[in-house]
Image 1 (cartoon, rainbow, N blue to C red):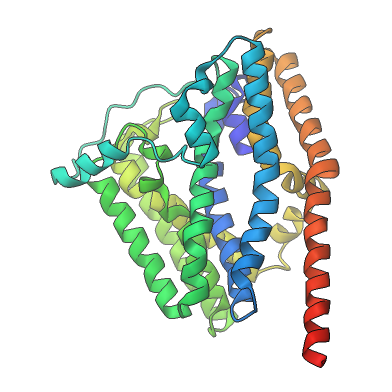
Image 2 (cartoon, rainbow, N blue to C red):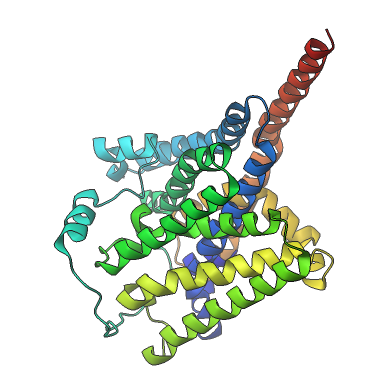
Length: 367
């Protein structure tokens, strides 16, 4: 919902243009995803075929909507005469989830150059009011999915093979290395690069390790509170000297890229952790509302579709309130149809397979 507020121009220019900062929803998603996936992996530790179970679930959840979205995107753009996505490199990146691997050579040169961080804030340009351009621009949102997919691929062995202590140490090392890469000088696409953003889901993973530890709930809450205050304080220390940032693209600032991203991740991790520990709180009850649970169910496909649908409308109409609400309604409806008649049946088929496999395993053990 935050990302849609950022990408849809009519929404983005409301409330002193605060919705332009809706891209923080992706950072919150990274942390939440890291927490959930690590929790799942911790529950799979020691079970037979843990890797197969985990990856099969991820494939069933991610691939069908992703392939369907790409097929729709390529068909519609071709019909409109928009062939921007038909280059060989773009097709390969789409097929292998390489959208966040842009500027590999630039990143390598940057690391080898030995540059240091400038402590002066960058002059900020105005933020764009929302998505615009050809329909093929709907492909742009896939950078975050790329990071997620390689996080799933690379993080599962860490949790399933290592002890919790060593896995937590590995996660901490990843966070430090990612910060170091950003310190050496970000590329223009630093905010969308796996080399610069891989630490975000790891912050959620570290939160999962903390909650799964033997520490009592009071101690865990205290640690999360301190972490949240530290993240908020660091974020404030970065933003306050920058002056009025409303309507400005703060992701262009080098200091924010280096320290602001982990500060947001630390704050998000604390909020997620506290919501889990304080599961009976009013905030947790509010998050269980029917509207938010509905949005949660369709959120994956809605994230894939929202920019594409919006740009399809803008291909014909100006971005008025009526057009914006119509595109949002269309995107939500398509996502609900996908969840109800496409995604959910595939997932339920997977549950049936796992249930049958467990039954066969019990029978074999009894024999």
